[in-house]
Image 1 (tube, protein in one colour):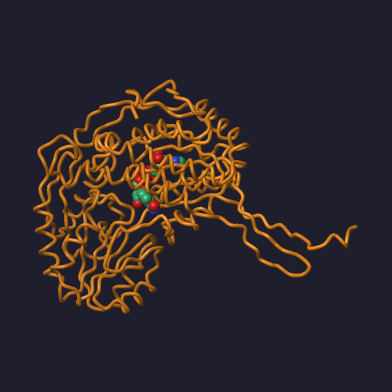
Image 2 (cartoon, protein in one colour):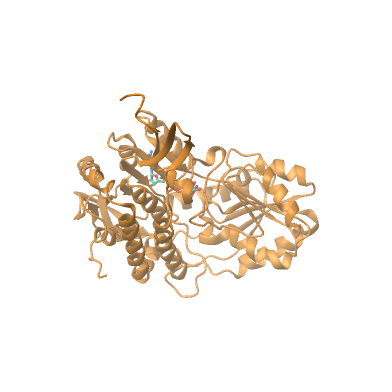
Length: 476
Ligand code: NAD
């Protein structure tokens, strides 16, 4: 598809430019390279009204037709992966081959979600009556997305919301609005007007959306602090919510693994996407017997890694995505230095962008800021342990509960340990995996509800029980 050269919102199936605009910064150069619309309250009202109007007919469209449209949308996204990936790199910073994987992943998610089913459940079937539970759409969904996986995480919301018969208004992060706007251009050609609306704006837009009475549900991905504000705002009208929030995920490495075999995977689990992944390893606990070996290998990998502008061939790790996050990560690094912690770092390019060296902090105290806080940037604390009960207690000693990983040659033992982690996901001898059929659901302050699979799909529905008598004798 030939994209238009400007960046417009999608409201009621049409391009909308809004009045004001905001600059979009390339994090590899720290300079603005495009503008996106800054939606006003009136733009939001128009988008919600369009979605409300469209809901009346969209909910009646047979599910097989909705499925077909989702598949077509997935095809279109995949077919445009190359132009979208180079735009993605400019706004998000990730190297272009990895950016393309996200675009293809979004298309794949549309396809896989289209195959899900919400059959009517039968909870009773006797001679007297049958009780059916139907899964009805809720209405207009408000989808709010962060900057670390802007396209994929939008698809995690759009595809199931629409399959279930809802309509949607999507807001990407003001730091990464462009690919989502372009995705809107594609979706305009597939879905009836008003079914998918994409709006962009600055800091005022998110709170305006969560307070808007036209939404039946908010599906939010972002930080725990913002998630709490979203929940407060949603409480006023008892809007349904799904919150996918922050994490401080622990990986536990038992002494029966080969340091040589696992070090690269441990490194990737922590530093992929320059460590800006909600489910990245953010605390690495390695058994004393192999700690030195694993640490030394990881330091070598960090020193060899190529950090740079993601549009340049050979770059493995891009910059931190935005200035605010860069300042936060640098502040954590300063605090680690002030605490006198042992710090090992790779190199950064001599560029203006938001580059942070890939950093390993060697066995910091458990109460240091780099261990307690979610860095969401390339600073990994790695700590020694001796005793498995003690390390499980350390791993669980956090308000977060997103994911975790166990590395061991003894899979049965690893499964037992997995059962003791207070997280929504545990991987064994792998990292960062998610599938369209498997729920991502944060435990504790990492979330509320789930995304993906039938678990995520149900969150876009209202169960409705219908009691159906087998005969009308009692009344006629
Ligand atoms: P953020 O909370 O600052 O922003 C997320 C989105 O919310 C953005 O679109 C932002 O504009 C909007 N927003 C900001 N304030 C708002 C308000 N008061 N009301 C409504 N919307 C508001 O998060 P971020 O910095 O964009 O993303 C990083 C965070 O997201 C990290 O904590 C990370 O762990 C988390 N995250 C979680 C998951 C998950 O699936 N659990 C996935 C990706 C990222």
